[in-house]
Image (cartoon, rainbow, N blue to C red; front, side, top):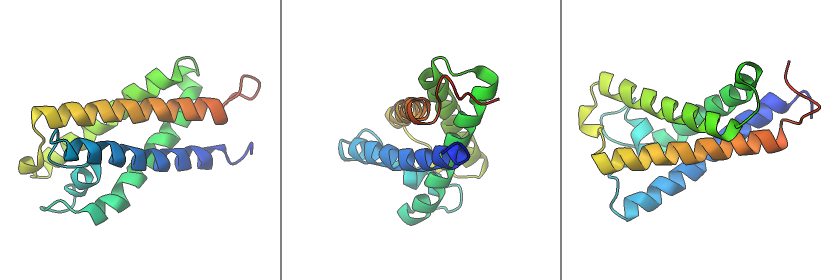
Length: 145
């Protein structure tokens, strides 16, 4: 397991993307946001939201986030990793929103409640990713150097 830890971090990030989608689907059913995270990420590539394109892009984004969270422990340490990864996940969500607005999809921008739901979801899944990575991939005796 020592050599496969980056791969496991990527898989944790991909699994977290589906948890994020479930969270945003619940918020969408409650009327808090007009789009789920899959539909939001698909608007980077298409004018209309597509759940299928989001199914391809969001786990890749989650994989990148999981890998970066695992690798950033070299530089920022392992203490309070769930808080650090929540902040990084929120930063990644904000960067995707900026890319969507630069791509000319300004009509896909969420309402205030939609932005709050997405930012809160990014923080929750980021904290969960940090917790899972610290619990299963990092140990006090086997630190990344």
